[in-house]
Length: 249
Image (cartoon, rainbow, N blue to C red; front, side, top):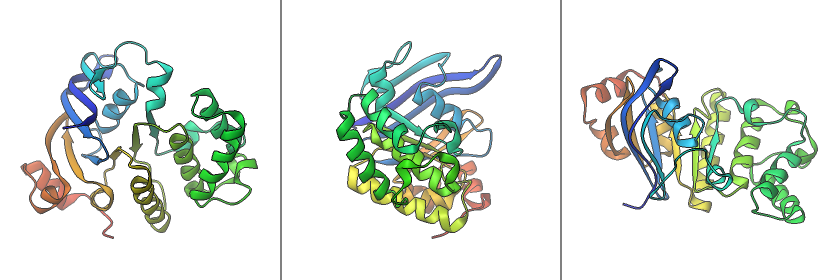
């Protein structure tokens, strides 16, 4: 299997509070892996470990087969980008969005200043944002628009892996659907590899190729989305499928 990301026997937590217990997770290249589970199951902690925002207490994180150890390099940070539920955390309120995206490109060496300006304009247009989006501050956008700006900023540096942590859960249903359709289209256009975290199994079914189920800091099952939605491999998976509120598209 050609894996972009692997977590091997990862344990992690916050201070004296353990959260992940021997987590094994594989995200194959050009696939969308849905990570599901109830609140507190460890989904977001696993994402933070993968993105380098939290150091595991034991185990390994591998990017394209190579262990990521110690402080992440600038190159490693570029290769794994994350979009959060609240886009405010990744957008500088004092920077016009065009500048924020351009500077990310230049900082990571994926474009010159002139190229970055041109690429930013095309990217914001692809995100279906207003023509003057590059000249506006984050506060002038709606919630859905801010999330598309955050997605644009993440994709601008051409990552190997995109992590979406509840990236659509705070949006209204119609806005959420448009965001999901955009993610699906961009995935096809760019051959993206995505770790998609959500509590909503309707959303997972809409965008994901594979499903990984977590509970109490452990991975309970991992299989194709078709197989999971046809017949979960565990009793908890069956309970989750029956009980979690979901949007059917």
